[in-house]
Amino acid sequence: MRRLSLAALLIAAPAAAEDKKPDIRAKLEGHRGGVTAVAFSVKGDLIATGSGNGMVRVWDAKTGKLLAKTNDHRANRVTSVAFSGDGKLLSAAAKTDFVVWDVATPAKPAVAFKESNPKADACIGTVSGNGKRFYFAFNFAKADGKPLEWEQLRYHDPEAKTTTKSEPYYYWRYHALAAIPDEDSDMLVTWESHTEVDADRARKYSLRRHGAAVQGEVFGDVTKDDRWASVPAFSPDGRWLYANGGVWRVPGSHAIPYGGPTISTKGGSIAAPGPGDVLAYPPPAKPSTVVVIKLNPDKDPETLAEFATGIETPSCLAFSPDGKTLAVGNEAEGVVELWTIAAK
Image 1 (cartoon, rainbow, N blue to C red):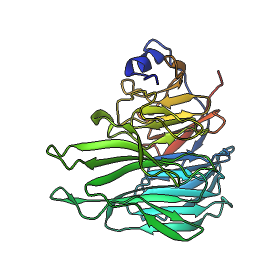
Image 2 (spheres, one colour):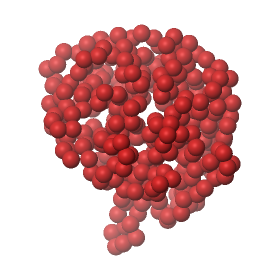
Image 3 (cartoon, rainbow, N blue to C red):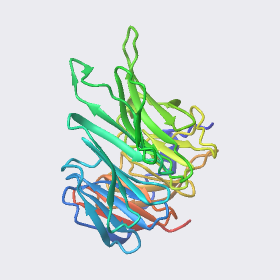
Image 4 (cartoon, rainbow, N blue to C red):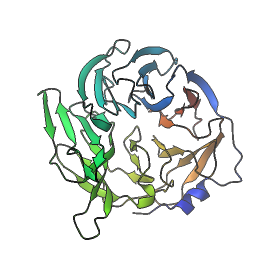
């Protein structure tokens, strides 16, 4: 498969391109703890946002009206929000807590599952696309370079009401995860690291996929420069996966081959793959800018738009399922802007 390099990315977003002002159709305001996470439901009718003070909000995506807010994370910073494929479940993770709500009635979210560990220093989690697995993992502080507790990936089966743990691995750490937004799939992607039990005891980083049919299959290695990149993200149509500075094409079988097309975004930045093979990201060398490019597996990406924004660095990004709206988080102002993206 063709590898799309950083040079190709720079070609896709030339410095000479004239920036446009975004068409802001709505603002989701009131995030006093800042905006830390955003997600659209697969049907596009709802938006979920997370804040630094533990609040999770549910919004009407069309009108921008606040439908509900809940605080089940004990004022801890929310690091991720995600919907199941049918939009009836919403999950969020924050430091010591992982929560899943039933949002079949969006204005009245009801806790469907909650797992807490007050000793954890980080938590990641998401609901699967088919809603049949609630994946989560707790990470713990270390003493003398050793974990205080085993760090295991777990999943809860809401029908059987059972929680299954993966095999514990010493010096193993789960950094981030994402589920494909397909209501017929339980596929999960994790970004993991572990220390090799060998002479150099080097820290190894990798991307793996999980599910009922496969457990921990490696499909990508993460370089040292990319290891601090943000939470993995699937495009709403499930065709692309962004993770740790790379973009992988997802085949219909979901069996992502090792390697794959990659665009480097210099680790630590964020990106949102959208439907129709597009990707939005803030260029690391150009603050207050968001670029939307067309992903082409067989040639260099094409710049569709370059937006000038007052946000120095967006805290989170997400495309609507129809690709007509880009949600842009401004942590400093506590606002999510909804931009209208013209088709090209």
